[in-house]
Image (tube, rainbow, N blue to C red; front, top):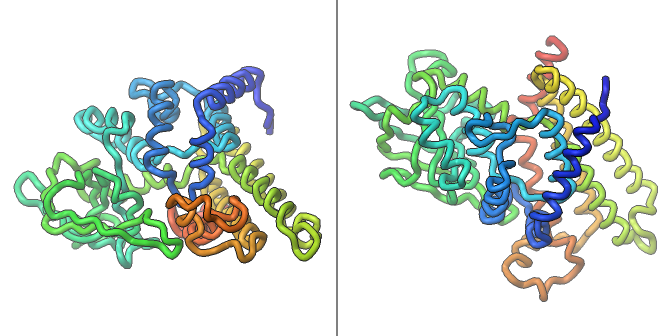
Length: 400
């Protein structure tokens, strides 16, 4: 396997570095570094999206005719690496990276013309309506119904853990349109404006005291049948295709490397008695183990990159990478919480972000530690739970 980048790739890397250095302000970096939830703050993400749209680099995976960039797989990987190293904020993926690929494959010409330009410009802000109370990992058991009435579907039910629904103006939803067949066969994919009569969004405040997720209720909501993506009752196929993009395509190792360096910096300042934690062989050994595991993840990403450069697909390696990156990140957050000890106060980040910076007790690096630790617990559930990924690996890799 050749894991070296070409001279042309390295020239491109320098172009990316120069762009990030010029356009990513120190304030934006600080805001991104203080993000504790899954997605960046909406205003920050939209500001960065506007900059990237102007450059033409917002959606490198999109077809060129819709605003994408004709980058090679290597260039896309380099872009992700350098963004992670520069602490660039993440773009909100729900419309850009999840719904858009679905529309490219399954959308009608009218749907593409209506939605894609507005997703790219930021005029439309989307959320995802998949999970329901009692239907999470077993998503095919969902019960939100859509019954035909004239040219509309009448939708009733509820969706839960809906990230950024309190910001969104549209939601893409899985609904049940046939109860007389096996669960996967009776599901349809709908696009629904959130300002339609009968829709209510209620907040869910996490134990980290963050408001990122919500519950959305549908009471006799009339949705035009023209808002259906793909054939009726074949939404499960559409949903599985979308989940390939939710679980990502690699590039996590660069960001994890930055997180490990942050952990090492904290552990060099915090002491266990008279000695910095990084001088403690036990603690330093746990950090070193994370570095080794992350290098293995990086090598796995490069192997996947080689497949992609030859026209292949990631296959089960996306499940392997998802579990590996989640496990490493959770351990990083655990070690950092141990390092800051009693400064890991609940709601510390909220106290600081509400304008009380001058009143903060302790080092500034401890502000986000507890919130990140708590929020990272969910990462082994969303985007396909750890157990679901293990089942995929067992079938596709081990043949079980």
